[in-house]
Length: 306
Image (cartoon, rainbow, N blue to C red; front, side):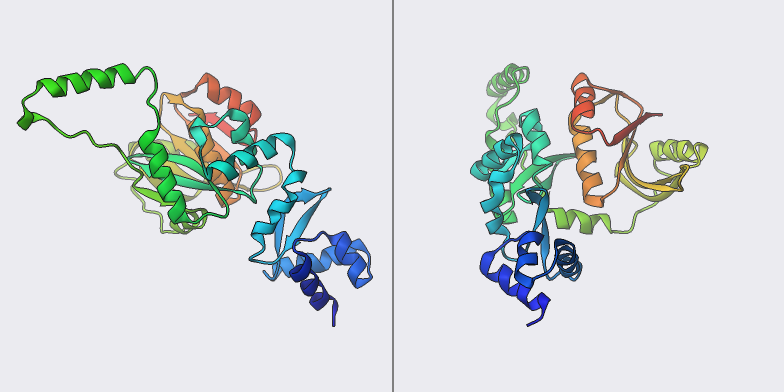
C-alpha cells in the first residue's frame, strides 16, 4: 500500500486529520505529509477546511463535512457564538444580525454559506447553516421575511394606511401583499450567474458612461461590466495599474446619496465569491454605521468617491 492509499484509508476511518497525524502513519516528516495532502486537495480527492486545529487546517473526504463539527470547539469565542446561533436558527439575516456576529459569520466559512436573496430591486444577504438544503433555506427565509417586525418609524404609517383602506368602499380596496423573495441564489449559483455574458448598455446608461470616463481618466482597464440597476448600480471587473503590475479588482459602483453598511456587506460578499479585492465607487457619502463597519469588518474594501 503506497502513501496515498494509506492516507485515504486513514481519513475514511478517522475523519478529518492534520498533517502531523498523517506523518506518523506513513512514517515521514510533516513537510512531506503536508505536500502529499495538498496534492490530493489539488486533485479534488480531498477537501481542506478553513477551521484550524492548532495552527493547521484539517483535511477530509467529500461527504465528511458534518464531522467538522467535532472541531468547532477550536473556534475563537466570537466565532463560536456565531456558529452556535447559526446551528440553532439554520438561517440568519445579515442586516439584522449583531455586528459581532456579522463579522464572525464571514470567518466561519466551513459552516456559514452566504445566500443572496433578491427582493424586488434589492439584494439581501442571508447566511445558511452549511448542512441544510437550499429548499429548507428558502422555506425559512420566507418565514423570516413574513414575520419580520417592521421598524418603529414605519409601523404608525402602515396603521394609517390600513385605516384609510377600511374607510374606502369595498370595491376600491386593494389587497396589500407581503413581499416574498423572488429568487434565492446559492453560492455556486451566484458564480454561475456571474459567468453569463455581460451586456453592453453604454448607450442606455448615463451612470455607466460616467464610470467609464472615470476609469479611462485614471488609466483603469474595464474587463467586465454588468448593469444591476439602470443608472444606479453596476458590477464591474477592472484592472488597476500599480508599481508591481496590474491588479484585478471586483468593482461595485453605486449612484446613491447615502451608502449603507448593507451596501458594503453585499460588495464584500461578491468580492469573496469572485476571490478578488473590492473597489467601491460612489457619488454619495457613507453612513456613520458604514464608516464604522469599514474600519472593523471591511478593511479590504477600497472606497473612492467620483
